[in-house]
Length: 230
Image (cartoon, rainbow, N blue to C red; front, top):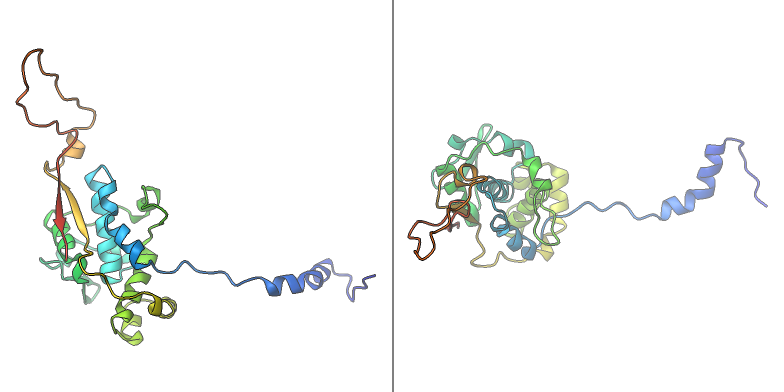
């Protein structure tokens, strides 16, 4: 038989559930990405059929993981903020270095004047790498993990990102490992500038019977080339 010390139903409920509430695990924040996941994210752009989406994928990865930029900072980046070789990006009054493995990809985006990028919220509705949900926040956290795994101090990292984020990143450093050689960010670029927009809804003309068509491939399916970064 239970006897409550208070007639207040709220206090009675808390007394009855206090042990269960105390034993609940603390919520886990989504951490940074593993090296295997980052390798898959680096190939993410190639899974999309339009140049706008491919450029958005590459731009978000290059700025969030490459330089530790937040979502709001990514939205503000303009073409002139990026060095010709993609090695630095200006944010506010600071010129930030960009990780080597994304420099060439970022330089290509700059050369094609794709900045400012479309709203980064669109990436949540786009096709994701299998089993991975890509967000700028987790990419920024991964930047911090990678930097500290390479010897950058906590103090230096907290000068770029919030201290709470840097402290969470520090917990993941021991299991991160070394960046694998040859894993670089690549752009997938249409051979036809603006072909994705120009050819929407068009069809390739049929060749006449008995004659072989010598025309160029339909621009509805633009040829692609890889732009390597690193």
